[in-house]
View (tube, helix red, strand yellow):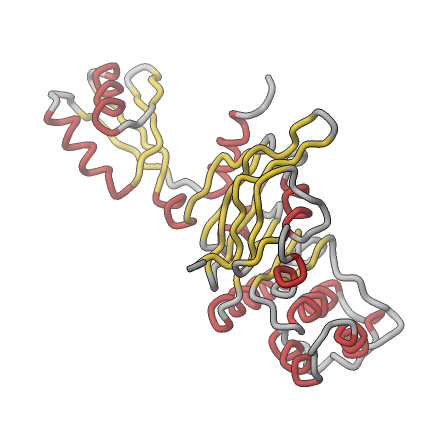
Length: 303
């Protein structure tokens, strides 16, 4: 039985002779928010275009609610709502009229569905105003309502907070989290605001040079920090870290630096002590998602 709302399996994309996307895989469970991160030119947008059917994979498959976009494209896409590159709205019409027009293009969308979407995005008091008087944040809410009116199982958001002020970003974030938690909607969100991804998402997939270089839970990322040990025998410390814990480290004078889980820190310190190493000082530097992103993507740069 398929448990993933979105399952991307070993997709590749070749344009002429160049391999743009290389064996990319990730999935999203029901009610989960996944952050999709990558520097410019990493293949992030190409991957998103394939997921929403704007481009075809050269190989591999994408399933939405168990339906392959190759074999059951219409059924797969019927479960998707998305905002790609901002909402497309008629400024001279009201927000509600915009939703009615879009709803008329979809099968089975009722007035009740539109009203529920308006309530979900918190636009009830301004929905009959013309779009031309809306703030950027209000337009983004209408765009989100557009994506929700046919009750999708998967919501795809590409840079949804672009142009929003801090208050608008906060409000949008809370709406998305509510949709996932209370409505069980799965969300794939691509954003350059890494701090927002950290606050909003359950998991993250990082792509660079066409390949996924890290799939991880946000909690796992935050639980792993940079640890610096000041010891009497740095080389022996480095050996213990590598041989007993499979942790790579760097030496600078009497300091040994490595990435380690906070939960394992006492176990590591005990192993170092039992190996006869004198620990003079230990510093644990908390890491953010941005730290991980910059560290991983920097390794893939062409120097």
